[in-house]
Length: 145
Ligand code: DQA
Image (cartoon, rainbow, N blue to C red; front, side, top):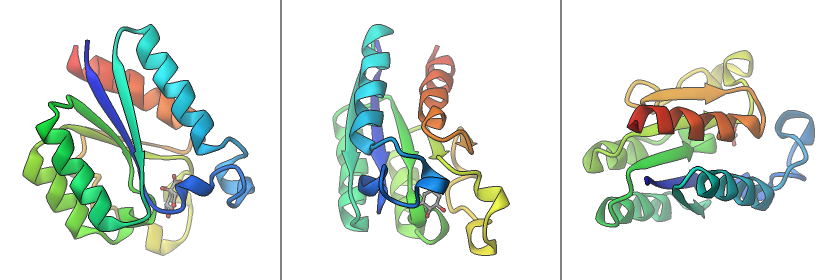
């Protein structure tokens, strides 16, 4: 049994209504319910957290370490392209994580071409919409097994 924590960054609470042509029409709540259910069915626990604030995301990452979370599933959203703070937090707690994106960031604007997380993540899953989250959970299970 593994403890997973799903963390979503800024503007992802607006999924479902936010740029649906890029991010789809599924809400974050629906994603969280689906992922919790999948994890439970496979004998794991999954907690969820979303914030638009960098310092709250840092605190949640620190707390995850204290709570003996085994693995993070993380969509840093726009912080992907800007946050040395969150990169350092992840390195500080040494928790393995997968970087998730709904959209295929490699095909988008130039400013999305750099990630502060990809080189320290176990791996990155991008471009499959909400399925990116499910693929990340499956990949994390394989990594831990
Ligand atoms: C995103 C991609 C980011 O570039 C963007 O800022 C987001 C969402 C994605 O899931 O595709 O907010 O992380």
